Length: 623
Image (cartoon, rainbow, N blue to C red; front, side):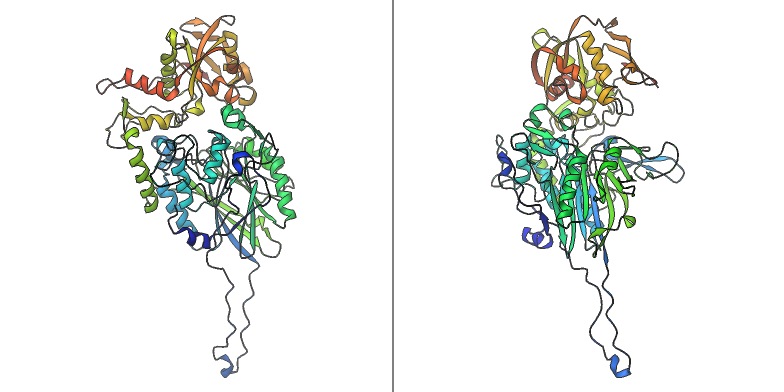
């Protein structure tokens, strides 16, 4: 599975993992005994014990140069890859860069062929180099990886020499047992092996899940930490996902698991590592923030009013023990390299590298060989674009081609036609054209009396993973939507539900978009045709929803009346903080969201009458 023979790689990589930590149930099987790290050529101090004839000239024998007391350790990191082996399309495949004149330019970036080249190029000349990730390596993946339960992505990460990653919330999309299979290997329990004579080997890097424990045993389901070692240098890595993972993953995915505080967990294991003599520690945290600018080259430490970073990672960083020297984060898909003071008031670096492999972070950790700690004042970091102008990594091209051949019969099947890009993930407005299209498809799929009798539909914005792009991705022709492209938009294949909700519950759900857990970072539901209302963002909390403007097909929504509402099973379970939607009754389960979307495309578009982007004018926003 590696680009070089496995035994050669093992000879290069020596990573010592935390020992003696029991795992549970299926997670025990075949867990790797050690985690490995790079062991490239020793960085020995130069000097000679030979005189080279100097004595014949009467000169004193030169003294050996003093051995350096610090070494620079390179930390390369990225996050939220989400199985994007091929370059992401449309706006999802660009990175914003602020130019010298202040304008912002969107630069195409990402793709595993380019990320591999970037990382391998960056490592040159760095005898101490570690590659780490901040979670969501898999899950919500395009068809090329998602169709095969993300085995192709794990294989690619093995080839690119990833040393360690934290789990993210999407690592739990298919549950803890499937996560254990990704770590330990073995063919899929129901679909078997995808290639004849080949058994999936699993990840040869450790997944860290320090704050995820089994309800039965109370112990972490995977390793909580690991220690990278080379030539006396020891750096510990602790990995956690956001404590709120159960709120954004289906109930089945987190069944039997408990998610603990990020800060308390990191501090617990930092103390444990410190007792073991590991003084240099990096936390991998699948939680993040939002910098004041979306440009990757924004100076996050700018002192101006409104500058800096906000979001959950700020309070987490302020609470994480000073024993931790740097925080690699993720989840919010933002790009930043910020300084946030630790509890002792000392500056500490917090980084994130956007998403989909479009950026990587290069951080220099100066390691003091005497104290075994990082010289915090010497830490420096920057994000770099994974440019598509560089050479492709041949082993990644080969991997992608191999899996594409297996996926082709399904992926290339046409589903419908569009007249222009229909933006979803890349939309700049809370209501997106693609969100409207998906909600309409769900309403159509469940409106018949025998299909659920739905009168309106809601779609969660986080479930829309890409744009529908007009330009052909292969040989299908411009404007053709293939199964693979539709899958990339909706990769979860959630089953659709139709439930009874009162008008009052519907209004409460709308208020939950902008209040409670969602007040700081609103989650605006995408709505089907006929449902309209006004959102006043000049107000706060639930008051942002102007309740007397909520109408269905031109009539005010009656709080006491019962309505049939369509939504995916994630929302119907109260996901994303929509507790009101979880109160639905008389549930009817329909086809999957992807099947309904494809059926809608087939029924409502053709080569001569393609679908145009919806106007996205159902929600009136007052700013």
